Image 1: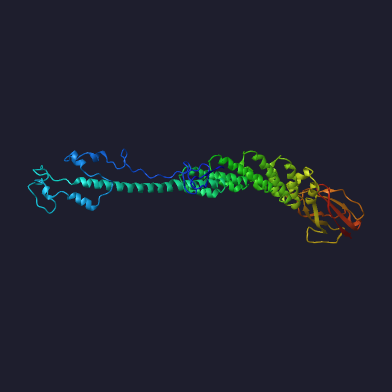
Image 2 (image 1 turned 90 degrees about the vertical axis):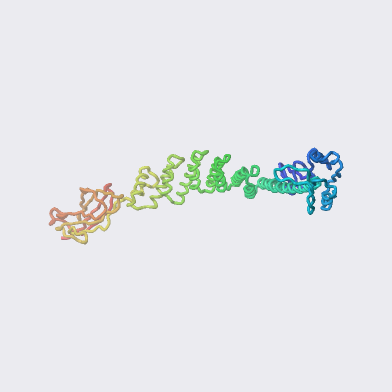
Length: 464
């Protein structure tokens, strides 16, 4: 930026300055000193009189006028004025002249209002008074002119010089990126030159500066304040987009995703949204926040390997919720088992396996009774508790009996399906068709689930 040197004080000023910011000198005319104002009347040379002054009065002759002393431009003293006034002796007064104060009237009479003059005519003493008033007016005009000049200079300083200096200082502050200082200066200048426009211009450049410094939030705030000024709305989106990319770099994936989702169709915001959300889902899996990760990858659909990561998130949920009563676990595990995902089949069979607990025998339906030995002539009841299975699941039961002589039956299936709970299996007529010939010894029962997988077994001693 080139500088202007002041011809008056030598100070340096920004290019385009009108007045020197150091001494107030007008830079457009160089070192020009103010001349004394010309107070002379146009068309009149010094010491001359106007045309009105040289014309004789109605009652004066040219000789009378010529006989008057020359006006030297110096105001007369009081003594001179008095001498001019009383210079004519009383005896020179003609008949009918009005006497001076203190004298009696002669023959002449001053006419009353509305009457004409009679014999006498009043002597005029206006000539010396006109000269004195003329000099007085010249003095007053000079003083008044000086006051106007001083006032004009003062107003020029107040309304032109000082605002000009302040404006140039504001421009300097703007060029030096002291935006807040420049902004306040333009605000205070109000309507001076283009100060109101420069207020917005200063904010605009401040926002661009903040954007370049990666102060995205601050930049967006200023662009938002500017509204429709220039391309502020577009620059706001630029700043917001850059803010989203910065959040991605900082691994603040969810915040970045929200930024790009807000930007919608701006640039490649939709792609950046998917990328940020995808990375957020992977971050959730790493943090074992499987439920949230499942939500993310379900929404991403076919993006990248989101379907594979969705299965991984579901499997992680299952492992962390190995509860056969949890419906969510059941649905995920069933789905994963069908897809043959990792060890999901083994997990399914383990979690939803049917089991028998508390197997014991008695000779009645009373589940609370436990007998170690039962007569071969009595009924035999096997009591147990069925557990496991999927939520709200049920299963058929198979049972295989082995008698004391080693003979055994086939796997007999129950007529109904059983849900988890207390169950009994009975030989109400005894285990022998002809108990008298039946052998004593150990009677064993083995139970199977609907898939004919062993889920429990028990035995009791048969006696006479």
